[in-house]
Image (cartoon, rainbow, N blue to C red):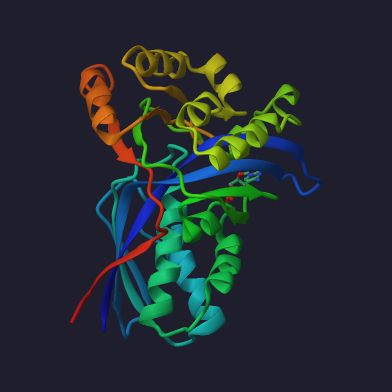
Length: 294
Ligand code: C5P
């Protein structure tokens, strides 16, 4: 097999609580993360010429700074010296939206190369490599529904949610994760009640309770700076979303709906006002090898 395609799924945060600032400058957090079926497609082809990368979105650097490239470099350095791969990213996940698009691509590269280069690594080893690349990469390898703790890199699987519809709205501006953490005010730190409540809701599989419990510690400060966040939340709720919240460090907001059909209806009503809008549903399977080449 010389070519592999991997679906790299986006994530949303049902809750995101920030426990405290760590001496390292990072933050300890507790978050219930959920994979959704909005995905990039990562193609990996064996190459005799080292690592190379192309991408169909020119806003994304197709060079050594890209997390997908760094994932390949790390895998090669640690386990597969002398190997080469041509990577291509077909981007569908909006960039800078809090949906872990870059991390999902990196997770897909690790998973694809494990097969293409016959590295023979198990999921725990891949997760360990992923954590060296970025805090969302371990979750992207695991997929489904999970509790993320530590700096976000410690992930424990949770029971799968019932299939829910998700309307994701990009407000037209991006937020840098580093800046979002740096700009947090003290009031956003130390309260982990939302994640504890969400863990109970996930166990009970109660969709209304899950929706009612959505929470993001970054949201209050971003709402003060960007009135679009409130506009989007209000519009999603007015059209019948069960609830709506910021994802990750922003700037996308998602609305939760009881089904994909309902999410399509809500999206149809909002597309005129918010053109950067995506419909997805909760996805439970982790990254997937899409097909094998010759
Ligand atoms: O993990 P990732 O590289 O995506 O994180 C980007 C930046 O976000 C980090 O360099 C750090 O400044 C900040 N961050 C943090 N606490 C975390 C995760 C990220 O302060 N738990």
